[in-house]
Length: 492
Image (cartoon, rainbow, N blue to C red; front, side, top):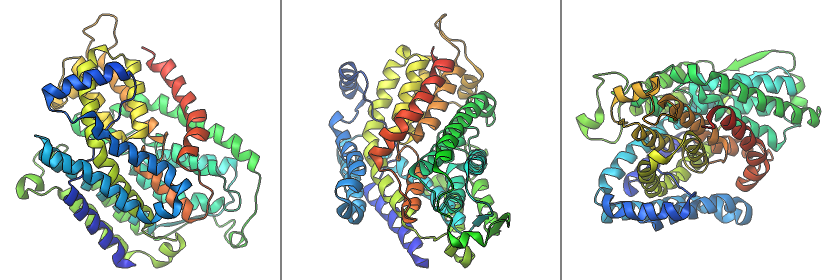
């Protein structure tokens, strides 16, 4: 099993090189008649892909939603082939029929390798840290753990916090775990919690690389973040109170009262190296060497460090900690293959919606930017969605996302060219909040969502399926909360 990780990651890299996968994409559903007409007009002048090229993404999304429910055995055994195959269709089209196809594929290949390096290394390192909490799960304890996890997500990222805490969270609640326990963990620790710093969630880190000051989001969003987290934890505790004590496992009694125990603590050193390496980028440190420019490879020193740490952490991990966590590579395997397909099939959708946003930016209000960014972040990856609408909103103010100084000025607040409109920083805040918060709407909104789901399923926890997650939890719980946020802060 030790070499499984290396083989899996190597195969993934080979696969994405072969099909030249992309890390971008956004699908737009509102204003169909006008939107499609605008897209068709843009196709002729900007060499955009045809609208029908979003079909592979739609097929993949439908299969992710229905596969585990209606053809579980087939899906479980063949989802890697399906994801890679659908992604290959888009990659083939871009490679042979799009003028800019090669450039797009190579650029997005870099993004995918960066993505898999980060979540893969965090997943492996956290698997070597066994946390035991010497108390039984109950509303107050669980609520405190979810709040701690939300804060921790801003320090080590939503992926790191999710992988570090999901197992102890399930362990202290064994015998009383319900689907909502996992769902609220995804809501808070895997998504909304990471909304305070660029480390917390990928969209904010991309904004930081573009020029948004590191502490800007913290100073602007903390009150929205705090109220949202507290409200969701309060709702969770109401549900948790109804569960009762449940059945207490016999092996848990022997640990009760021992406080907090951490086994495999040396892996925290690896965790620190990964977080530090996130900033090893020429866009962050002027003059930092770029392997892309020096060696013409689709990865940088940051990714080399992360992959090296992943291997070292696995080889030196505390075996008892790994065993206690029931560590295996299935969660990272599922995320890696599914996101190959997701990233690849989203490429044409991203270009179409990006062109639409640029063409109609002057017509978009803060409200429209909030809801479009949010709704698309829920069904597509939230990082490229954020960048597309940031570029569109800056275009509304005559600014260029390619200029660091322009992005900083945008964050400081440029007066609107329209007297009745609001300054630019409100647009940036609305896009930032929506991209991070709405990532919790579905399992594919953010990578940790799928990983938490897989880990819980392996522990035989009752986890809602893709569709059930949306209609039973996201729509009745998250959407009303997000609507209140819009009404109070962004109804402009």
